[in-house]
Every structure is written in C-alpha cells, then in structure tokens.
Image (cartoon, rainbow, N blue to C red; front, side):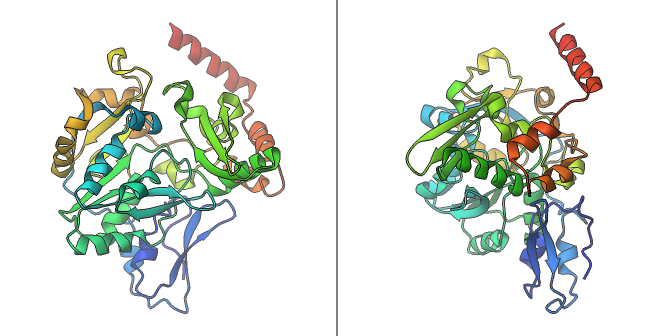
Length: 382
C-alpha cells in the first residue's frame, strides 16, 4: 500500500504506527537513517485510520493562545541549571509532576546510545530524560502508553518536538485535562545514521566504548556550549569535543548535513504553538539575565501551561519579556531550516567513508559563499 506522504513531508512522528489496529505499520529506517512508515499489505484492512491520524494531513485543533506570555527563567538549583541544556526549566516542570504522583514522557538514550521516547514516574527515571539530544527520537509505542496513563486519570507531562506533539494530539483525538505538553523550538532533527557513524569513529580512535553523550556541555559556559560535547567512556574516562573538534555539531550547525528532509518545510512553526509550554535557550537576552550559566525561554501557550508554571515559581528566577524578543536568537521559531542539497549524498557516503573526513569535504564553502559570509560578519560588527 502506498504511503500518503512524500518522504520530504513525513516527520516520522509514529502516530500512524501507534493507531493501526492490526499492527500493519512499522517505522523502518531508510538508507539515510530516518524512519518512515511501511505498511504490510497482508495485515492492512484499509480502515484509513493511519491517514486520518497523520498530523501533516490535518492538525488537531487545540486551545492554544495566539500570542503566548514569554519569560526568561532559570532554576534556583545551581546543580540542576549546570547539568541542564539552558536554565533547567524542563527538570523543574517535570519534577513537580513526578512529586505529585504523575508521570513524564521524554527522550532518553538507550543502551546503544540512540534516542527513544520513554515514560518515567520517579526522580531516578527523570534523570535519564535530561539534556538535549541532537538526533531524532524513536517514539515506538509511546503514544499508546501515554493514552493508557491519561485514561486512568493520572497526571502526565509529555515532552517532544512540535511534530511529535502534533502526532500525539492527533492520536489521542482529545486534549485531556490531565495532560500537559511541552515542546522546544526545533532547528531540525538529525539522522541517527550520522550520529552512529560519529560515535563509531570516536570508539575506533579512542579504542574505548562510549557510555554517555552529553551535548551542550557547559564547562566553558552556556554561550559556547552548542559546540561543546562531552563523551563518557565505559572505562570511567571522558573526553570533551569543543569547537571545530566537535565534528558532529560542526556538520549540523551551519552545513545542515544530516537534518530530516521534512524539517526543511516544517508545518509546526509560528503560532499558535502545538504544546501547552514551549522551551528554548533565550539567546540574545540582555546582560542582567545572562550570567553565561544558561537562561531558558518559556512560552506559556495555554491555561494549563500557565497553571503549571505558577506552581513552580518558588523554584525559579523569572522575568516576563516582550513577545518580540523571541526572534532575537530563535529564528527557527517561525522559519524552517535550509536542508543542505547534498545531505542525502553525504549520508550515503558514510557507508564507506570516515565521518570527519566527509563532514570536512561536504562543509567546504565556495569562494562566493566565503565572501558573502565575511561581508555579513563585517556588517554585524558595525
């Protein structure tokens, strides 16, 4: 059976796979490392639920604000703030839910250091959901798991990319009162294939097995953290990859070498947002709210979002900001990323080539682009 979407439209959210009553849809990784729905026609009963549940075909209309309240925030807990991607807001929100007998769904690393969505109901489990993970998460059957929690009238915080939140809402078909959704301003999700290739190169070079990856490592401060990654090894040692040495982030930030095709024309930008709360780094915030330890941007998109935020105010520093400040450092709030036209070629090249060498090869700027980039830098300085 033909899939109703083109490859450059499907986000891989997994809503169709979760809703299929016969288990006829599997999310299968393609040659570039991205998962797409594949239908087993021997099981399919042509009920059409898959297409009806797809958030690209039609969105689930939720009561989100046309113009949310915007806050610059950070946790009063310094350790939480340091470990977190920006200001530690996810942990404070999720901790409140856990402490009030609720559950949290978010992204974690599995035993193979790949990312998957997972449900936790205690603080120990919550630790595994922390920090940024710069590759696409496998949602598996998490929408079904979330629905089971909600039907039992238990509080649930569900965290994901905007397209994953959109997929969840289409699957659920209703906005449960005991559900609070959290998204992040997304620049685009990366190919697990590229990520695996990078880790394999590290393991071969270091002759050690990778145990943990810590993106946005703040050892040198928050503002430089996007290109600073700490890799822990099973022997107890670790290594920090920073700046140009951080080949994975170098291939992502700028060249956009391994971002999912659908991210080039994202359907879930701008307003109203998909989730009750939107989180991001508050890049460009004024100096009084930037001590280089991490400042979160929080957008409150619904009454449920406001209510949860009010309940954690004693745990955080917060300052209400103008809505227009969102775009100062977060252009991906309402603009899709430009996919590198050689992205597929790059990903296929990893079958037989070294990751770092290919990043270097495909990241080379033409003379014209170098001049254009230099002119932009001069203009910014003026």
